[in-house]
Image 1 (cartoon, rainbow, N blue to C red):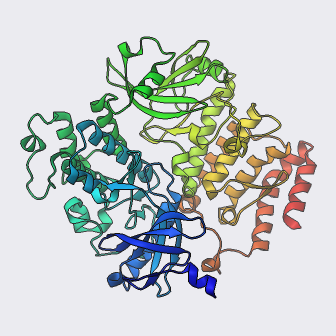
Image 2 (image 1 turned 180 degrees about the vertical axis):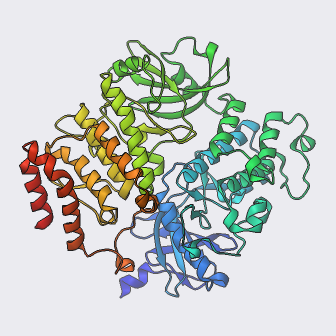
Image 3 (image 1 turned 120 degrees about the vertical axis):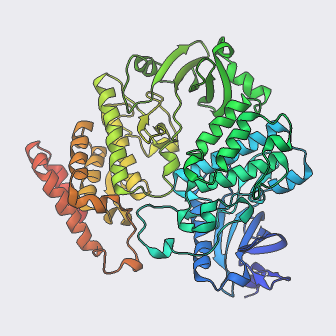
Length: 583
């Protein structure tokens, strides 16, 4: 009892307690919540505790949204987004969640201090754009972008906070509880016209309006309220391209705003021309690349690590963007990249050039603004989207394999997307080791056609369920979410994964054929667009009991696979299926 009292420390000003945390002081308060600086007793580390405001605690919709916030942020994993650590409920029923504590100041305070120079301001807006791009790709709209919701940490990095009134945006959402509200959510000076009128009209472009208001204030020190002055009227010699971008973001018509946060980011990067990068970053980028500055301008460092680095450049002649990847010469992948310079396919990232010296090999490839599959896996994809994405991966592999090129290390971050959403496979031959790749690797054949198809099967399963497949030795152990999928989809995924047991591999051509059959079936249209949900108490009566689902799964697999296994002499695989799902 005494130990429990020590773990639950009272906040003297409010009478609240947060089990496991000690409140140190209040650090912020908004319309929906109060934020405290606290100490996590178990790890002795500083945290930020956010608890719903007392005066709105009785509103069920706001309580529901606040309660969801921790789940949303927990799934968002990005260096420019505040991470959630824990969640809970106070003894009097007020929900709270715990975030990492960021030692720094918010952007509102930085604006008041007035010490940020032009380059630093642009750099911070670019970092906010990167956070929004990631969130928007996952269907998450912030809804309250403003300077006080952007923290600047001790390293100078922007960290976007308070996704508390964000919600997952799903065009197929048929639950009126998730869409019906007359509440004004957000901060009026930064709120888009459509958000002020109808919360159901909010889109990712609503965040871009707020970003435009933030950027206007960041550079002018004034909030763009009503009929505001042009930035150039406030500050003489204000850059025209930046003013045009801000005004586009602030356009009352969402369709006239930039299409994506990536578009805003790319415009700002072209304006900066790499001025935000320090001398060491520029020096590392230029190593091993001769005469780069004559043709290309370094815009940004996308990634740096032991395995190599990735840089964003602009072609000085036509202002197009391209990516330069640099890897140690000892690493694999240069031969595959060289072959791809002579090949072109709509589902393979275009390789524009390759060079190699004693220290590095350099790959120049097209820039793809749609991000990676890794960016989109904070929740399962709708079944139809997972099928279409897998189909395009198989189209790319079918072409590559036919031309003697094996990938060897397929994983989510190597599946990229164009601006239009087309799948583009990248990094052929960039074989890697380590825990991150092990789940996608066929250990007996790390670099083969069979291994590529196993990696594709794992990706398909992960897209459908949000999880990596579980195994007992080489036997698949399907998750609860897997059993919520249409039986035909379960069947396809399970058969694709069977090559781990040494079974016959489904080639990309056969996978494409079967996916086409699923996508062309009109009666399956609705179910293929839905996201699978894990079976649980709330679904009692709508999902078959586990033994029945196992048996139905067995029948679907045995019916589809039994014949081909029998005639191919793989009776042992059918016996395995029977034993796996009957006992």
